Length: 500
Image (cartoon, rainbow, N blue to C red):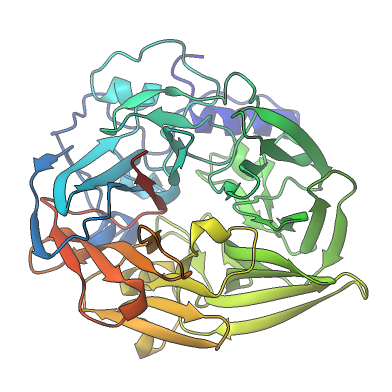
């Protein structure tokens, strides 16, 4: 299994699906084996996802006693971590796709009102270890990949996550890679980047997909930290299921019309998933207690990320970020995904009696990366937080798209779902904002009594700040701006990891 890549796996899938024989290969733009953590950067070639705020970090940094403007709240005791793709030593940028970059986790340690340190570290898959001239410890797992999509705390561990194949990688408190993690030898097969942790039930849930499967799998990990139940849900065409939702009663599965294309994989496509007009879009409710999935057909959109979901009488409510159809996950020559319009905050309401699904637009501002107070996952919430990043919309837009001027701004948004209102925290032009994460204040009694943390690029310094806002004074002056020694590229998802 040594040296196996995600491209090898996808080519193997193409062999299975097409019934033909193809050779092995490396990821597009084979990564230079001589690259080092402090070595060469990526050669640019007019690809948006390798330039500007997306440009990969070229070295691993460690800095202590970070400079702070304002005051760090003393009850913030833990680490703020964020994961994202960070290509290491690309030789052919034309074949690069943003979502295939090697995972790099960025972290800031807060304690006692101080910003003790900043670190950024590549996740050490076998390939990354080889490229850095290091020896990979132990046996290489199947479908090995430097997980680049999310990083979460789970029962005293820190886990870097990826969808469709790779096991999570466990990191230590200083972001060094420990080992692949299989939930105490109970997880086999694919996992997901977007787990849902129900704090009330002490359960971690996942919905996993894989190109060779004729189903997706709901995986429930119980309070012991072991996989307690795996349910196979039949689906056609091997759809990509990037995210899902959870309520107190149901696992909400979204069957999107982006499906695996064996011919594209065989031809060498870096991301062999295509918008499939023949694949109906459906929303499925799988009882958490077990049973049969009930499906509801809905108009096609690109469902990107779940905000939250909950049960309300005879209805199920799910709030999410959606792009208009069609959406091209493999891109259109830009080096990353391509959209035909802006992402918006929307809601599906499923009427269990009538069998109908009602769609509602909650906010038409361009926005992504929705988050709630994590204690309310699977339960009704009032407040939500999202981000709008001008450079991301420029990169995502189709070549012939004409986005409105107001899209080219950077701001964080707080939504009040009860009042149907929003507050905006605006950032300067060029100050690309990342996903906002809510952290409750110690002893908090209200849902929004706490802080919102986000990495924000400072174009004047050419580096990144960690912004700390009061969630209850969202549009006001930041409580603290922690000045990092380098830049955190635009990436994906992160978490607050509190000290025990």
